[in-house]
Image (tube, rainbow, N blue to C red):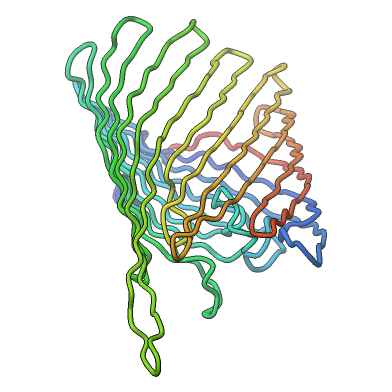
Length: 387
């Protein structure tokens, strides 16, 4: 992993090291930033934004360390307008027949905003440590073997009596074999193993999956990819059961999640208009006791009208099956959409307008808090400075 220590002894004129800061200010308005079902309150906030990538690029090695964050007049982590801080690092190595990528992240943010599907309207501080690695070996002109591995640990700062979210650790690894059938067609075999455990030691899941994937280059601009297979997960949870008259006896309850997993996507990469649409079904780690089955539908578009104007649309629908204590299954549906207009005043100054809508439906009887918001950002991209 590319670190910060080499900066201390590198000469000031070392060209491979550079920094390209991006700073900005933001003003936002949300109708229900806490995603409350009762006592709904609108809020407005102002914030400072920063993104400061430090990069190294030389002799087939690329590294970047990027601190980024949001500092506003809001306090706490119970709303969509919460502050956050991320420290991301990535290193890439390229050889004649192989390549490798290592990534790491430290993050402090809100469970409401950054967890993907919302956690039943519970907004608390979330601390994340994560690392991923990818190694690719090019066996021949047509075939390659790739191995991926990841580790993450997530902790939630919630009241001691709250049991909605569970601190957890997740490890995932697996190989991918790809063979290029023709100039436009590629076939892949994908394997995966995941181990999920709560940090309190009361629950864990072991999951395996195998998929067959096909990638088709439809035209120079359009690409279609699809995969499908089978997954199984064995879950266990320990609880204390009361045995009259005075005893609490630990008991382990086991359950299984077996079924199909799949993914399909259609992408377009052009000079002015890009589009990506996809659907997936997979087992995902969250702040619940086990892995959960998640169905995702996403659409992302970007259109460049001119040098000064461009537009973006991001939309997502997530449906989640939540295994609960005793083998029961709950459900949750999360929708999100954001439309963005960027006006590039100069090559360095950008004015952005964002319109957002998100909602979450969960529980029995079902409740569905939602929020609509607008945000204006003014950012300045500084020129690259060699260190």
